[in-house]
Image (cartoon, rainbow, N blue to C red; front, side, top):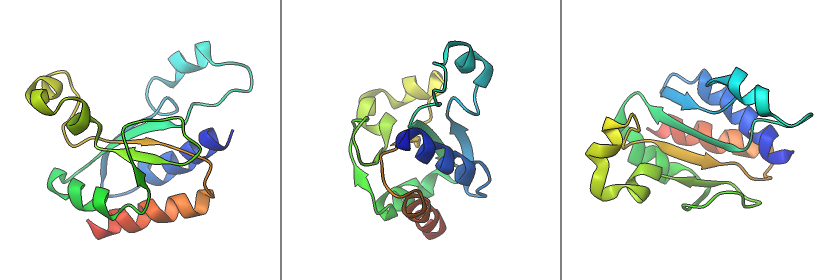
Length: 128
């Protein structure tokens, strides 16, 4: 429940943030498809991805995030990763051709205090 709630808090923040270009989360992308298979009382999950309007600022924003970094998800703490750089480093052009930007940031939300999580993202985004 905390993972879902924290993801929704970040979706709200990132959806309206002027530095964010695109956001992917089941609550905002093809929501009706997800709701068709969603468990009763279930959420939209704790996994989301986003890109920035200025790709060259991604490294600074990522490095400024005062959160754990790593390629996994489903932990009790939030993990952030430069997903495409980790998973497809030797095939970035291929990933881009499939519609997955090389500068995508993936977030797996944990159980942190939602305000602390939002503050971490707000501060990092303002640093870029």
